[in-house]
Length: 319
Image 1 (cartoon, rainbow, N blue to C red):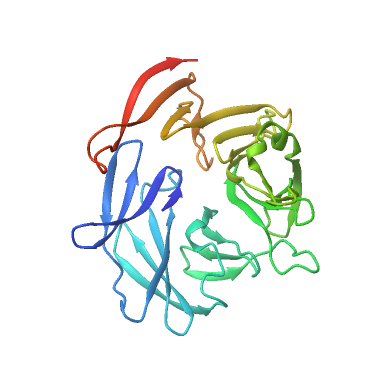
Image 2 (spheres, rainbow, N blue to C red; image 1 turned 45 degrees about the vertical axis):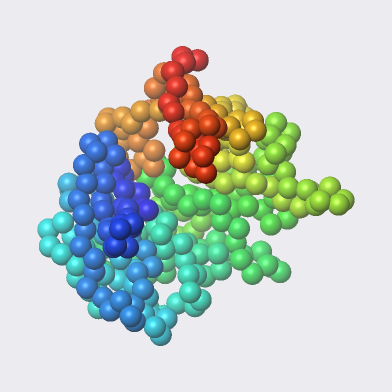
């Protein structure tokens, strides 16, 4: 799945015949378009990922860039346009390893899809001119062979990369790329120590000595509200999804999973999408009045080894 400015590119599998379907879906209008599969050799080629290129401020049409890997490790690019069909760019590059880049998480900005890697130089693909170029990369600390990338995305028209500090795992370095693409610089350093005390379940301990050996969390989103002070991370923890304002350290719980026996309760805050959001924002979301949804998975419903489980929406509670 790939997201770009309100559209989703999905890869679906039909269970009855194992047919793969590629689909562009607009969750706001609940409308979709099926995309024909690229004309490639199924025996020799592999579709690595598909990335959307869509800027509604310039055109209502979108493009799709398909990364195809051949047997010899050569990567080539096939583009799809709503105004035509699939077209080979005619350009190939050799890449080290099977998946050295986050091909499925490219970020579209300024007419290009940007790609980052744990250990290779960063790249960007010029969609209109169908060419691949090298862009500045963040440095890899001496003595280590890779970056610990937690997030790559765009906010307020700028690219941001979040890396976990290899020496202190509760520190996150938030990089921003200069608008002239000259270099990355550290814009924020975020210390998550407060979160480990509030959510001790995110701490991984060595079983025998109980020494801390790691932390369980991922970065879903980053919002750079430099002007209004609402600069925040959205983090997934083992039993929670939270927002963390890195300026004032405010924490809001967006979703909580409560486990009791075989039952699961999911409590979440609901957000709505704004049609008036500024183009290019990774969220395009505005806060609605917080609501709490309650979902229960109950034991004793026929359908699964005589006991079964069913997902049943319960009442809405206003918080």
